[in-house]
Length: 65
Image (tube, rainbow, N blue to C red; front, side):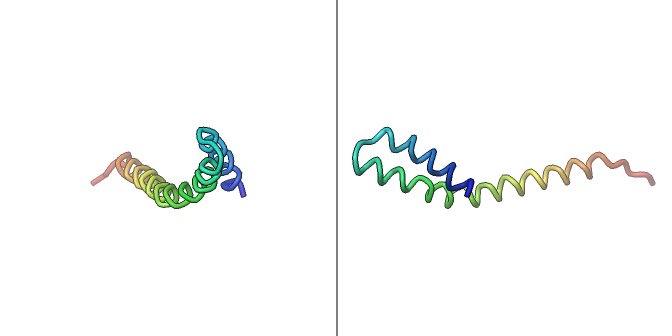
């Protein structure tokens, strides 16, 4: 639900730049495009963050032989 509210707010701002039906269409498409584009991007960023945390924690360990 929060994603829909954020999408609606961004769609309203983008649609304000256009007039009439064109603005309504652009405003309606923005949330759909955001959902499709930032879903995989969010997974990629999250995975990269997790990999960096694991890498750093392994790097900090001292090896005792």
